[in-house]
Image (tube, rainbow, N blue to C red; front, side, top):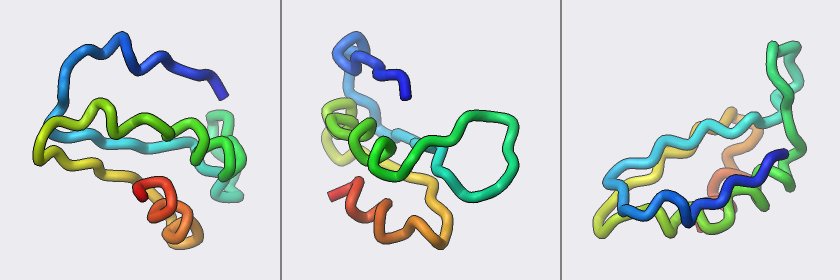
Length: 72
C-alpha cells in the first residue's frame, strides 16, 4: 500500500469519507490489501478531522469489527 503524508493537508475537514481497498474476496478491477495494512494505513487520519467533524468508514459485513478498531 502506498503511504500518503497527511501533513500536506494543512486544514481541518468537517467530513471525511474513507473507502479503503479491503480484501472482500471478489474479483475487482483494483488492488486489494490485507486488513492489517488497512488498519495501519488509517493511523493518523483523525489529524484531518476538525472540531465536531465526522469520519465515515466504508466496511463490509465481514469487516465491521475491523472498522470499529480502525476508528478507535
